[in-house]
Length: 158
Image (cartoon, rainbow, N blue to C red; front, side, top):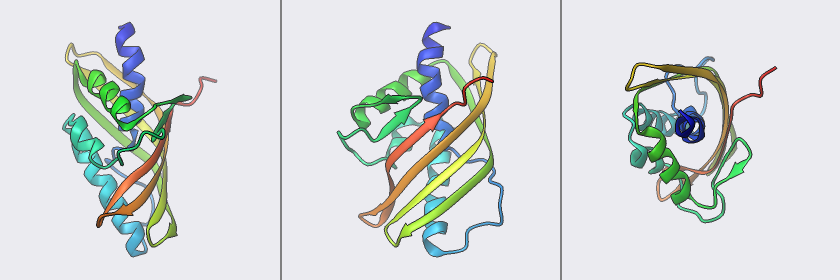
């Protein structure tokens, strides 16, 4: 269980960008629509427990592309390995968004923010559920929307 808690929090949070149902009136502009579409493709990979597919949407960088609960990962590769380990023993992942918003910065950059609840079911049948918050900076690179930086967190208990 200790291993799950360590790598599981990264799993819950990195996968927090996975999208099952978003609140709101829907996208209004072409950049917002494209960013949401990329985010939904990330979701599909996460729902299939496909870490490589999920990380295909994260730019390869050695400049700390992911922060999770105060931990700055040194590289995309480091974050990917933690997520792969976190997937071990996981049967299903479900993400429900209370809110998901895109702020268009330019024609080639946008910020996606959201909050919701993640539920992870382990292969032994145990289920873990909790709230999350996420912010992702998407940039247009080589004709596709990629995450330049992601920040994931679980709210502190009150």
